[in-house]
Amino acid sequence: MADRKTGTRDQWLKARLDLLQAEKALTRQSDEVARRRQALPWVRIDKDYRFETEEGSASLADLFRGRSQLLVYHFMFGPDWSAGCPSCSMIADGFNGFTVHLANHDVMLWAVSRAPLARLGAYKRGMGWSFPWASSAGGDFNFDFNVSFTEEEQQQGAVEYNLRARRPCDGRDAGAGTGRPVRRELRHRRAELCA
Image (cartoon, rainbow, N blue to C red; front, side, top):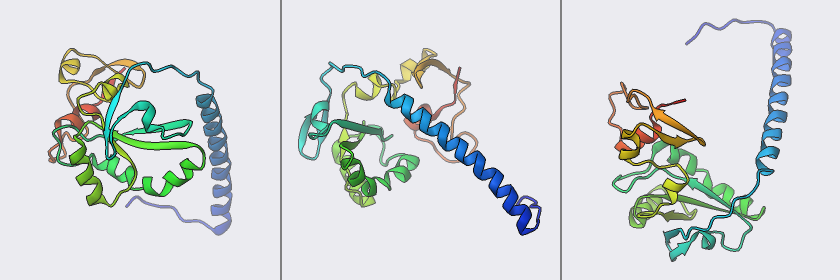
């Protein structure tokens, strides 16, 4: 544990109030970024994306389920994986609790993954989740929205990530040096990308 300095309650209170001002400034900045995000122009999607859901085949429009907004969470779960990404799983643990709140704001939430629906369903049941999860297996959806890359794209030296063309760095990845095996797609998806 790092060395910690001790002080009086008054010293702590002064430092905490200074920090509170910084936190409030950060909140205001976050609110402004959210306002700007909401003001972005919409882009028409004309491609006929298809998904497999528990209710059968569905179009992107079907995923809205009558709501005016659709929130898609790209859950990293590749076609040949036996389990979902641990970080995505931790995030998804909260989905059941806030889907009702999103619905009250006219928003439909879906997780979308490239794994087959049967594998997603088994994992979902094992985790005790009830939120809707669709398979985009065999389609272009994840690739068109730059959340999945092929090995060839990476070997060619450039992928589009965070809205810019980037090149993978020297092959290091989130699992390098940890002694833990890293799934190929997860390794490539999380690979450090250079500007």
